[in-house]
Length: 128
Figure 1 (tube, helix red, strand yellow):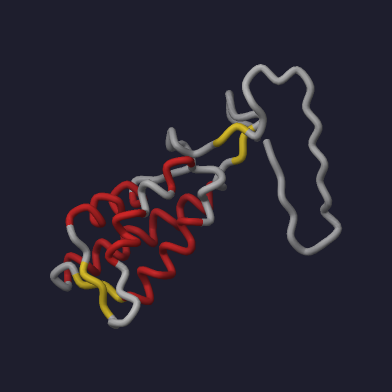
Figure 2 (figure 1 turned 90 degrees about the vertical axis):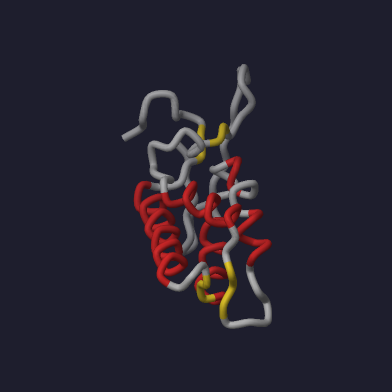
């Protein structure tokens, strides 16, 4: 069903939001248990998953910058400083109902809208 005020918006799905939040919490727990050290592989995977939301979540890039800065390309572990932990906490709190979840597909005040879609393949895109 379409939530009030979400028509014409692209949003992260409920499951997607739940998965991203879970992933962020898992990294934060690892960081707390290992004195801010986390697996670089896990951190890289989280960044990839969270970045996929950037079309629907405008502040996605802003809330990934510090995490990206801490990612070690050469070491097995990355060390999370306070800014990266703050960004991860933002993602840990992310949910379907989050105020940042949803971006207008069309400019406000558009009188005419045309949406062309092609869904004959394996991957389908949709909008509410």
